Every structure is written in C-alpha cells, then in structure tokens.
Image 1: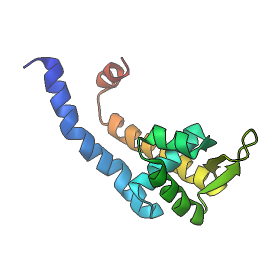
Image 2: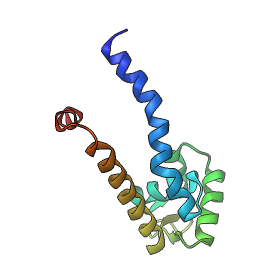
Image 3: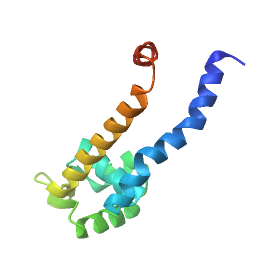
Image 4: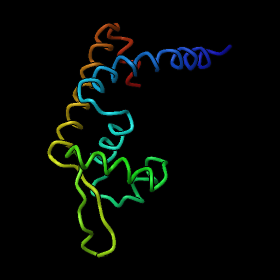
Amino acid sequence: MSRTEDVAREIAVLMPIIARKFFLKFFESVKLTQTQIFTIMTLADKAPCRLNELAGIMDITPPTVTGIIDRLEKLKYVKRIPDTEDRRAVNVGLTAKGENIAKSLRTTIRDNWKDVLSKLPEEDQENYLR
C-alpha cells in the first residue's frame, strides 16, 4: 500500500471523529439540525440567493429547501427578500440572528482546529500547510 493510500485511510477514519467533536456540541447548543446549520452556512457565503439556486448549491430539491427555509424563517434565522429584477422571484438571506450563528460556528471550527493543530509538532503543522 502506498503512503498516499495510508494517509487517505487514516483521514477516512479521523474525519468522522473530528466532525463529531467539532459540530455535535455546537448543534446541541443552538438546537438546530445539521441541515439547518448547513443552510445557514451556505447562505452566509451565497446570500442573497433564490430558493432554486440554494437548492442547487445544497444538492436538494426545491420543495425540500422551501421547507427548511420556512422553519428557519419561523425561528428568525433567515428572511425572504423580494427580487428587485423579477417580481415573481423571492431571494432568501440571513437575519442578524442567522449571521451570528454562522459567525459563531466559524469561530468554533477555527478554535477546534487550533486545538488539534497545537498538539502537532511545528514541523507537522508546516507540512499540513503545504
């Protein structure tokens, strides 16, 4: 087995563990599902956007994304915004509450990575950056 295959196998084992460590506590603290968080994070990068565009980015059907947005809107994380160019279309974007969740998750991820990387020797950290 090649070194690349060994590293790929190790990453495949470690990624679910790291993801659980990074995200589970956060999901529990904000009482949102993974899909709701993924939607908020996608909107943090792409908003405002149309529901069909969001569905395409998230690789889910438009009716599914509509349901997710309906629930997040009730929780005041997202808002619907009339499209200025097409009166029939509606865009969706984050509220201040949604932006705060996205910022908080990014901070959590960064802090968790700092914790993980701080346990590695500096040389290994440099190799990671390559």
